[in-house]
Image 1 (tube, rainbow, N blue to C red):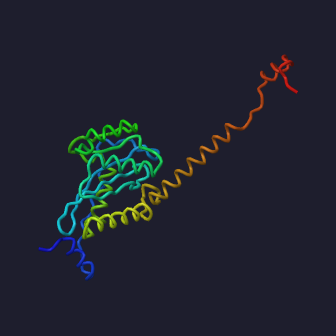
Image 2: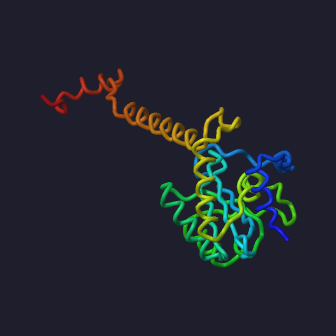
Image 3: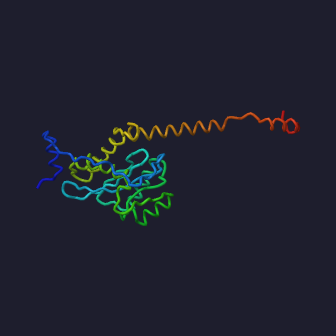
Length: 234
């Protein structure tokens, strides 16, 4: 019996035709949630499963910023507990300089655990659980997972855990830094996020400069000053 991933790799090496599964249309919630309008407003998280060549099971934890479409975490391990999920989210928040306002997730045991609930309370993060059996309500991460499955997991035969981590990390970099999205104006997720941050900083600096500009006294203030010469300073 031959591993299906090895068979696909042999087909590619021999330049044979490899039938690729067509991606279904991106999942869309029946009652669309309001689109985020800034970074860190809402993240989406989910798990995926795969295996190494010798059958060792792997779990992949994915996290996406719904505003910029950035893949902010893709962690691979043989087991990922709720405590590890919290640590991963802490790491991502430290790297990005902020915790999200909300996180969308399903009702899996790791996400519905006391550990993650405690973590969310400590950092002021709202956990938005989708309805059971309705993954379309978490459409951003579902669409992302489809790409990961088609373009990464199904096309690679992982020798071991280390190989899986290297491959997934390389795919994540390519997705964030080279993949252009029509929903982002044909920009990559990293480019879109960087330009948004720059625009926000420019707007903030302009606002600070505006409030610092001295204003001329009003007519009433001038009359009051004239009527109270003792308060004037030379």
